[in-house]
Length: 215
Image (cartoon, rainbow, N blue to C red):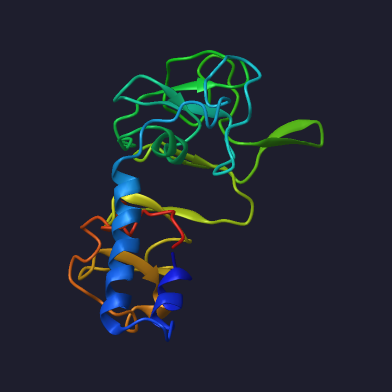
């Protein structure tokens, strides 16, 4: 998408009206594909919790549990996997149950460890004969688990979600105008449009502040 638009604009064989029409059709096609997407349960056959020993989640996050969705009672490795497969978005805050990939027990309360086997729901390593929790991040508000190496995560009470960074007032700043968090050194530099992140993108249909698409 991001390469197609400049290519159209730079095509000398097209008039201005033809360029406008092609760009419009390009965006309209992308939007239609997003809106008409049907649930695809065959793209990722491993995204079905089969009990103890199931795959350690997905490419998005490192964790030792799967999350049960409140909307349709299905287990998924993470919200991104759910949104890719289903025809509706997950309510991350409504999830109350998880399943441990260590013991296979399901319908356990959301917590930073399994109430049955005690395994921490992030990766652990053995150090000097004892189990040590490493890189552990758990947010009870967002029902979010992550053990990605080299990534700091904090919960932004202003945004209401977890974000990458060390925290508000540390290396991040929340703009009350557009309603998003930015690196603190750009607080006076970013082009602010009031509440611009509250509306979904007309192309990918995701909220810009939470979108994982690369256009």
